[in-house]
Each structure stands twice: as structure tokens, then as C-alpha cells.
Amino acid sequence: MQTRNTVQRNAVLHTVQAMKNHPTAEEIYLEISRIHPNISRGTVYRNLNFLAEQGVIQKVLIPDAADRFDFNISEHYHFKCSECGRVFDADIPYQRNINEKVADKHGFSVTGHMIVFSGICNSCK
Amino acid sequence: MQTRNTVQRNAVLHTVQAMKNHPTAEEIYLEISRIHPNISRGTVYRNLNFLAEQGVIQKVLIPDAADRFDFNISEHYHFKCSECGRVFDADIPYQRNINEKVADKHGFSVTGHMIVFSGICNSCK
DNA sequence: TCACTTATCGGTAACGGTTACTGATTAGTT
DNA sequence: AACTAATCAGTAACCGTTACCGATAAGTGA
Image 1: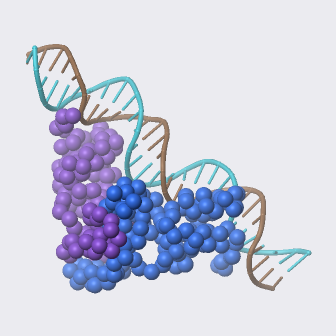
Image 2: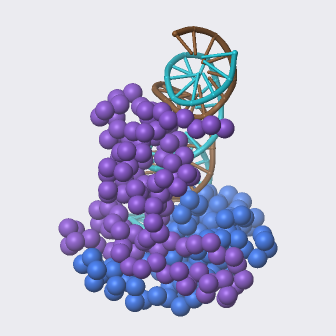
Image 3: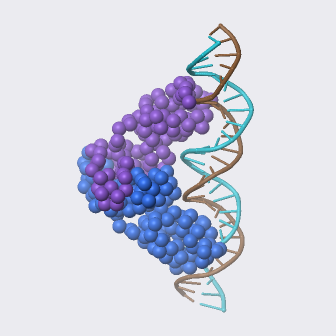
């Protein structure tokens, strides 16, 4: 199956790369709509998942909230403000060793982990 | 506001404490239905949230899946099998220090964090 | 022991976020 | 330029969960 370079797909990619605030699919849709008023939510969702699948962007799963999308595809963690709901990067080193600890303890084959911190962000306190 | 000791609330509590597999609300509902066939899903959800709010049980948020409920209210981590979707405890020490690292780095007031490991469980590999 | 109040109930509708379906387009090949 | 199938816009359906409603029953106080 060949993949195509559509204006919609490019718009989704460039919008994610331009928005550096871990936007939700809806926020990305609203942003793109300003330039492509006819784009469909379904198209945005489809391409976000496609691009994340390809590894060009990253899908960030936030508990109890809509998924976020990140131009930064490196392994890193996030902080969610319980007041305003905004998501920020948590710049601490990736804890690669804890994967092995869990693997050793339980025998699972551990492929990765995610960490989400919670608390109050600077502008909320 | 007084709180009441209803048969439904007790059934929800005891069922969570009896099921040690991080059940979802639906699984708890199905289990209780065997003894209380008329209980409503809404009642199960309401009481699960109530009991979690009280700290009697723990709500475990799993990305991209239904919430789980845990009789074990201590701080601990979880592993989700990407094959069968089951959730297991990940018995490694609670990393209390990383909260401070994030707080120091960003200035946020960090109240906690969650870690979810992913990979393949023993019965799936 | 019996009202009385109101927390909680069962049943169902609505919600938010996301995916699946449809027939119509359109990108990339030949 | 013609062709084919990936992708589109639009909309319906999905899943997990919460909100609503009139009915029920748990705990008080007389």
C-alpha cells in the first residue's frame, strides 16, 4: 500500500510541529480549520494516528483526558496540571533501568513505560 | 452530608476486595450482578468513585483503556500487557525522589506520579 | 416504633473522545 | 490522459462514563 502526500496530511504534520503545547486532536483540528475550513475531524484523527504510527510525531496518552500529540518524538515524561489540565514536559532523564527491574521481578518482556506527574503548574499556584 | 451504608455500596466494596485482578467497572458490575441481578451500572460507577474518593479503594488510570479498581491502596505501579490487555502490579519501589527532581527543574508543585509499563505478559509470550 | 428527610437507588438519556462507514475525490502511477 | 486505490468530507456509531429523574430506603429524632 503506497502512502500519499495529501495537503491534509501535510497540514496535520506541520500544525503539530508548529504547536509546541502538546495539543489535543480537537485543538489541532481547530488550528488547521483556520486555513483549511473544510477539513474533517475524522481526517485529523486519521492522520494524527497515521503519523504517530510512522513515528513522525508522538501520541501522548494522558490519563482521564484526551490524547495529546507531540512534535518531540524522543522518550520523555510529562506533567499534567490538575488545575488547568495543561500538559508540560518533565525534563528528567529517561529511567531505562526500571524496565529491567520489572522484567527481572516478574518475567514480563517490558518494552517501555510512561510516567505522568501531577500537581499544580507555575501559573496556577 | 451523612453517608449511608447500603447493600449496593457494601457489595461494590467487597467485590473489589475479593477480585484481585484490577477489574474494570464493567467486570465488577458483572460479578455483582450474579448476586444482585438488579443492580445498575450507574450505581456501580457511583460507588466505585465514592469509595476511591474516600481512599478505601484505589482507582487505577490506564492509558487507552477503561479505568481499573484496586483493593490495594498503597502507592505502586502497574504493567499492562499489550497483547491481552490485562493489568498486573509492577513490584518495584516507589520512586519518591523523582517528584522532587521535576519540582526542582520546573518549579511545579508535584503531588505525585504514575508509571505504567507495557510489554508482553508471561502467559502471552 | 413510626414517621420524616434525604442519600442513594434503578433506569435511561446524554456526554466526550474517538473510530468506522459511505460514496466522492484526488495523488501518484502507467 | 486514463486509471486505480489511498484518502477525503460528512456522518453515524462506538465505548466508557456521567448526569438526570422519579422511586426507594437508611439513618435520625420523637
